[in-house]
Image 1 (cartoon, one colour):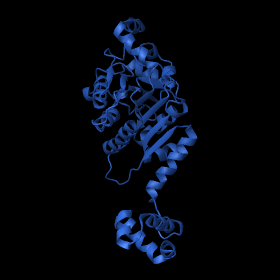
Image 2 (spheres, one colour):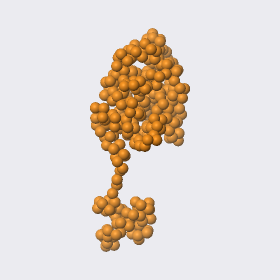
Image 3 (cartoon, rainbow, N blue to C red):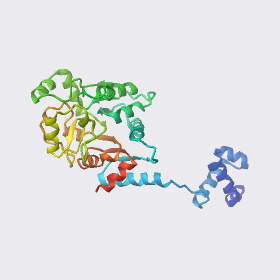
Image 4 (spheres, one colour):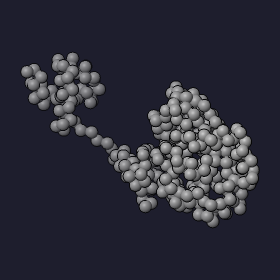
Length: 322
């Protein structure tokens, strides 16, 4: 009888809702304060929601991100899309990259399993992502470089360093390709791939369960680090531009449909091949900046990602690009 009296009282519903939602009291504290049982508090709070005494409002910028996530998932057939809300003129390219990398780190920590074999690529976003990992979470997973080294890049962005650091963070094993990813000719690449230590790493490619990479853009403007550092010589750059290059991922260069550009570099690059990459069960791309719209769209058309983590500006631009 006592419970019915309280359940019929709008005043007690209001008091319970105020104590719980605005004052942050626990249900046990509310029960003691109002001299009722904890189950009765639970019923009062349920009634408060059902009758509109309390309501939940997600502010527009955040609600838009949720809508964009669903739209992008459906349009490109993704397993998951995470849109990082970016607002305010004070945001810089670097701060946006860090915000996206942080969400990438949180996602990796949320889904990684001990039996996973993670393929890792190079880059600035990857550097920040690994910086944000919680070193207290140990999974003893296996980590492998998706490509060879880049001798001309900043050493902190080098894939060998990144793989060793992420393996250390998770308490796992690391396997790295030490030679340069850019070989002088196909014969040099073949000779490398016949070496036992190289073959051991390459054999892991087909066993990778989870890959994590950024993406570089060549279209409409060449903003990728591979277009700025002395990775490509003039003739290689011109050949790629002639093949309609849109961007790069794992040292592989892709066109507007996400297919690898048929250049001489295909046969001189020490990296996972595109068919093997596409067979990876979970492929995560973490990217930021509207300048990557066309390249990211190409990658998604080519089925190069299953999970996408990007900033809200890039997400809006991606949806307008169709």
